[in-house]
Amino acid sequence: MITIAIANQKGGVGKTTTAINIATAMAATGWRTLLVDLDPQGNASTGMGVAAADREGSSYDILVDEVPLAECVHETTIPGLDIVPATVDLSGAEVELVSVEDRTARLRTALSAHAGHDICFIDCPPSLGLLTLNALGAADTLLVPLQCEFFALEGLSQLLQTVERVQQRFNPDLGIVGVVLTMFDRRNRLTDQVADDVRDCLGNLVFEAVIPRNVRLSEAPSHGLPALVYDHACAGSRAYIALARELIGRLPERRKAA
Ligand code: ADP
Ligand code: MG
Image (cartoon, rainbow, N blue to C red; front, top):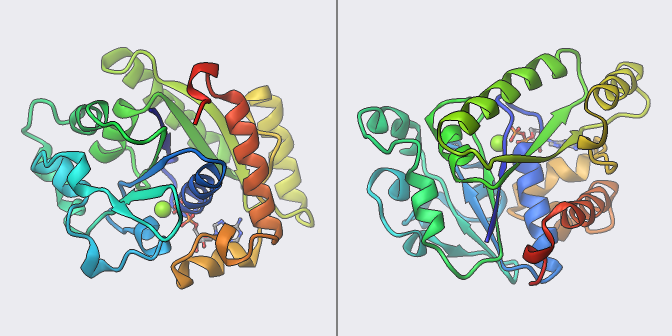
């Protein structure tokens, strides 16, 4: 299984939207896909239609009580896409784990013992705390959604510093599969300027696929559906399909077989 953390310590940049829709696109392509919701807000769980009352067996249980991952995997309405949901207790996990020795390795331990999925996406919370560190410790690689706004690059450099620290301390093989520009608005000149700056600075690390600002993407979660199911032909869905295609091209060859 290849594990991809979707992280950016800024809130509202499109992490969850990206996690849900790229996971759906991968499942549609025949990859047995697992989505791990690691944000106490549980937006990925809600967006996938998992009601708060149906989240028995959650990412909290895996991290804090070391419940086997298989017991926390829930099917979604999408064939080939399963989810480990998040509950509000997860907000306490950072504190509960503080004195635990393997506190940054809990998720890695759980995922490394897991079989049955080809690819796993981890939707991270908007911080660089213990939850995100668990995701970075467990991941083979990182996918960074970046909103084209002023200071986007400053935030990114902070994230890259954290990645370096994680590489030095507990996950030397952690890679960065790419940066995806989100909520792109063609009519906004600042957006264009920031996109150019980001591409100048990061070159090929930036995916060609750009996710446009698209109201269908923001409507879909309230229906408990990925945009790719809610409206598969909208510009946002098409962009996520293009992103998935590009992502597959960047994954190591041996992992591609579904
Ligand atoms: P994060 O997980 O980084 O906090 P979200 O994916 O939850 O970000 O996105 C923040 C808000 O913006 C949500 O309400 C979401 O529906 C909306 N949103 C995300 N991506 C887009 C987009 N490309 N176009 C329009 N709205 C978007
Ligand atoms: Mg989110």
